[in-house]
Length: 205
Length: 113
Image 1 (cartoon, rainbow over the protein chains, first blue to last red):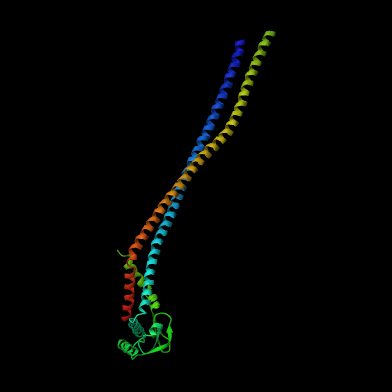
Image 2: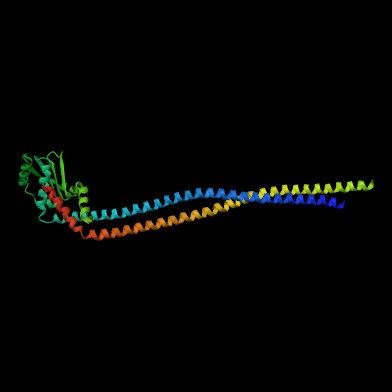
């Protein structure tokens, strides 16, 4: 009898133990499954982060390198610009020196003929600078040259007004049309072309 | 008769004890399941957060390194540009007077045209 009762209790005990063991196994499996899911989700997010980092790295690199390239180009160009401007300044100084010599008269005469020819000859007034006024040009001779070039009878009169800049200004008597042949203006007129010429001399190999 | 009743009582007690053992096992099973669900949720969070934090740290380092590398390359560009500027200056400074003379001659020659 006692064996029968022991059997009932032992069987119940074994079943209870089995139930608990299964519950424990299920619990461990559930936790491990969740860990696995978390790892999968993290791996998925890591791929997204990896792509985002890759893009960010490309953008950062592109921006830093492009900025450096721009600055490098700017450094070279601004140095070239400085050197070209230095030549222009030297040209101005050279002309300033020329204006103090007796050769200046010939230069002024060329400026007058050039300006008067551009105006097409006729009755014209000539404005000189301070130095030019002390080297009065041969206006009659110059008028003949202009007439020969334009085919128009030309008369050149010295204006009482003086230029502050070196060179000459030639204008029609009524003052309506003016050719500014001061050195500064000639330089400005031809600046683009001259800067190119200077750059070729300075920077070509 | 009395002995038979005693046997039945003993069997009933044993069966009640067996039922109690199984009920207790079921209660503990339910508790284990609830504990496991809570632990699984925590485990999920911890594993996910640790992995993502590690990945973030790794990518932040990569980004930092990439930035440093780009800045290094940028410095190299600028150093090359400085060298080029020095070369241009050295070469051109010898030609400044020549260029100025050519331009002046050009301007004066242009007046005769």
